[in-house]
Image (cartoon, helix red, strand yellow):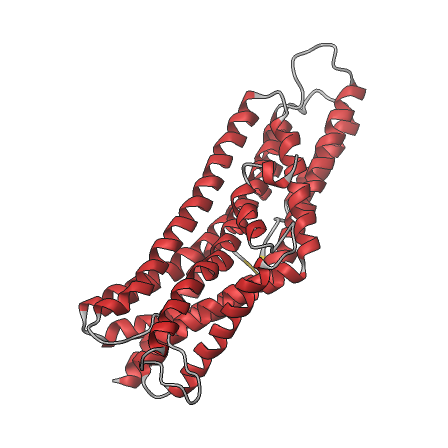
Length: 374
């Protein structure tokens, strides 16, 4: 199966292919990456200019960090294009194999997780486009000239005509490729972890039912079935390791940058009084929490379900089989005691406990910052 024909992965891959980040190589890649990167440089320059105005710095820092992450994700994706394409092609091949299994439970499982992955991908794109549109049009309702994203070009006044109109339209246009550089990567992570869950739950089901009531099933036939399940387990281990290698450092950047930004935005929410600004800052906080939670929730599910493989092996019909088969089931059980994990910078596992620790740390620094400010 081609990657573009795999319904679980196709939504995000088609966006990447349109911008020629993967599968093709053309001019679209450069008209998205280069202008957005230049805009991000001017955004960081504006942070240096506005240093001392805490409200302006926090708001502009949010967008600067957001676009920095978008550019960084895309550069890593393009630089490691061959690895991503190989990973996606392998996932599509395994998806076709699992979908071809003659089992109603597995078919329902594949259908359920495919719908969930597609819904997440499409809704993330729609929500990202909507919120980005709100960010872009918000300055029009403030009653004074303002740009969606703060930027500073030495020797240029951003608010004089005609450069103000040019900069505003430029930022309006670049919002779309910026959104396409950021959102699909998050959806790719969610879809890939969901497919990891499909593989794990398929293995669990097969372990619970590897032996049927068919009297013609000999020990050699059961051995071949179990050997195939062992190979599937090893394939799942490789899959999670490859996914972790692709995303672990992006997760580290997200952990560091958005943890600090969450603290700063909570502090900003505490000192502003204009309702429109409160709504916008609330939207910023919502975006941060949803993006981080999407990473940690799906990673935690992979970890928990990978350890449940041991329980599935133990729950299977192993009582009246040969010792050789029992030993293989024991090996599967022992290996499953070590969970499959997606990590932050190959250091900390991405679990809900880690997500809670991140929130606790952000809130602690927020209270400290508020006390010092007061």
